[in-house]
Length: 181
Figure 1 (cartoon, rainbow, N blue to C red):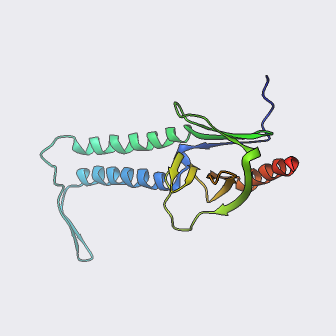
Figure 2 (figure 1 turned 90 degrees about the vertical axis):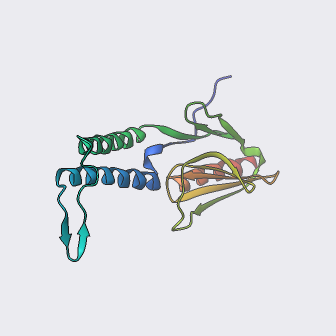
Figure 3 (figure 1 turned 90 degrees about the horizontal axis):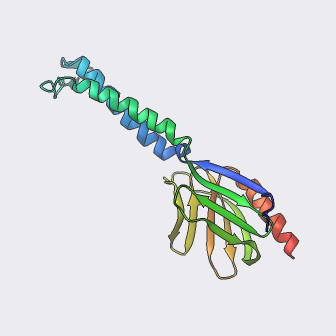
């Protein structure tokens, strides 16, 4: 049996999550400040704030180690932009959510879905990438973005699929559900 072309397809990459990007950039900035501090080890006072001398002056080339670590963090960040986290595909009767590497594919039968809602995440909530996370009766799939599609099936399961194009995803699922009735 040959599979038809997907009605909707979206790929989400790990490197696009805002929280993860901020953590990696703060670590890289810390490394570059450590490098600068090692190159200029004298104590200074700026507007009443005393900055002490470089504490690791006994270890040779410690500043270069900070510089190399900062560069490696930036390269790792650039590499994560190419790592696929979730591939969402909507077909005529089901949705396939494919995770990265050895993650199990999740197939959601659309004939069991009775409610589809496009919703927004809370403003200040920190969200890490998740794939097939079962938490408090909700199954979550998220990489990045501010919106998600919530699906409820006849058995009471709730699926939250984070998407950068949640409007298109909800519209394509609703179109299929309308064809069933």
